[in-house]
Amino acid sequence: MTQAILTVSNFLQDGLNGLVDLFSNWKRARARKAKARQTYRELNNLTDYELRDLGIGRSDIPSIAAGTFDDVRVTKSKYATNENLKGWV
Image 1 (cartoon, rainbow, N blue to C red):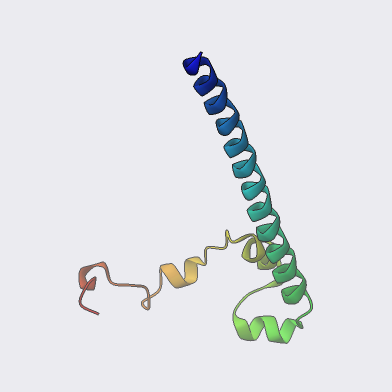
Image 2 (tube, rainbow, N blue to C red; image 1 turned 180 degrees about the horizontal axis):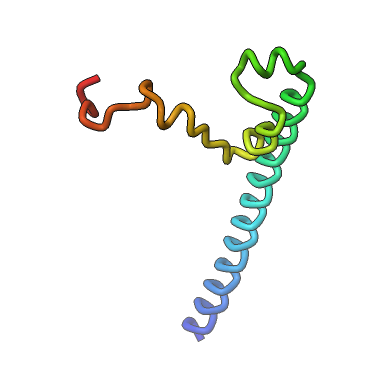
């Protein structure tokens, strides 16, 4: 009898923990999407001159807002991190 009660208790506890995790993940994803929309809106409201001053173009705005922007000009330039100096500089 005790084993049956413990099994049901564990089953219910696992279900509740799963629901809490699901809600936490949903809340985190919603906050991330809201931040991406806010970033998109703010960058889209800038003038072309201001965007050029930042070094980005209008076509870069969606990827910057989504967090997937990878500027090859920076990673391949002479100002990129020197792998040989890691830990020294």
